[in-house]
Image (cartoon, rainbow, N blue to C red):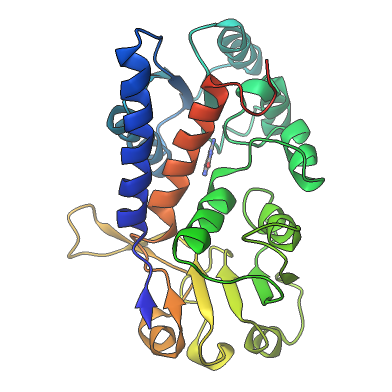
Length: 294
Ligand code: GUN
């Protein structure tokens, strides 16, 4: 059994990005810049945005965070997005989700210029990704593909079960892993809360991606010997002995599942660091205009 070290692989990729950015700086060019909008004070969102800012520093990018109170109106938020769309110094930006209930996430996401949508949430990017056109691919699925690639895990012809049908992980991953690509060429089954015989379906899988947000959902009896298990779960559970007062729990009952696997990602330190590094890769792509060409 091999534990996939997402932190090490993410550090490798950040070093590759940094080398490229240092080259740009040496040529006197403008540096890539990522901006983030955050609304309110949700703890998890604050941590995610702080981690993104830190990763920008590690990659040599410029970054800025625009913070707004929960009371911001949708119009004010849309105006802030319009300013970032028009700012020639900002290559890409994200609006951290979730947003307060009085703001439509869909309207907000659709207000982002698809060329700057480095989260890959805009319907234009989702649509382009779905039919295999160049697109910004959302960070978690892109990070999982990168892990599979860098670990040399063969995917062609393999049976892959994706647990969870979210718009930002399950659905794009189902699409990407079934595409004619490396990694890809999988036979993918998506399971969700209404799926029957989930245990039997999981047991047929060469690769299982658990992205339900249900701590320790995947147990040893659901996993075939030698399977690859990728755990996307990051639920905060209270932990009196942890400094922060909580601990991150994955969707996999790690201690009993790991011995059966050929490869498994831990939580934390598996998919999480890869998600952030994928956002950095998308920002560099935006800077280089690699996706849309202008
Ligand atoms: N909230 C949880 N994950 C994400 C993410 O990847 N991007 C944004 N913008 N918000 C999130």
